[in-house]
Amino acid sequence: MKTMTCKQLGGACGLAFHANTFDEMAELSKNHGMEMFQKKDPDHLKAMKEMQQLMQSPEKMKKWFDDKQREFDALPDNK
Image (cartoon, rainbow, N blue to C red; front, side):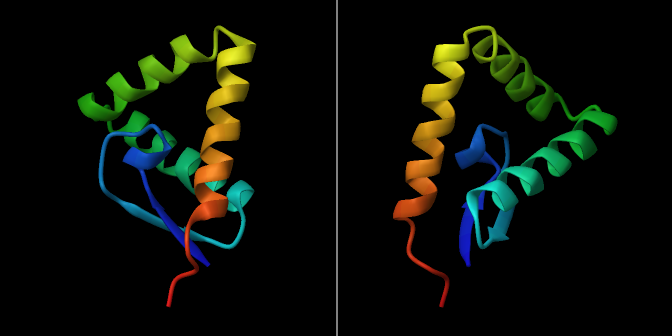
């Protein structure tokens, strides 16, 4: 199991997510983002707007995703 924060995944806070795979990590981050969107958290809304701009370019989005996957893979397992 590995740990990444909301901020590491493009978000706005230090909430830690724990997952065995990057896909699980992405799902946790997405669920947190939806919760923050519903709460209209201004910092998270700003981060979401930046992510939406990134998503306009499939190449940039793929690079971002691949970079985050590599970052996850390089993390040590939690003790």
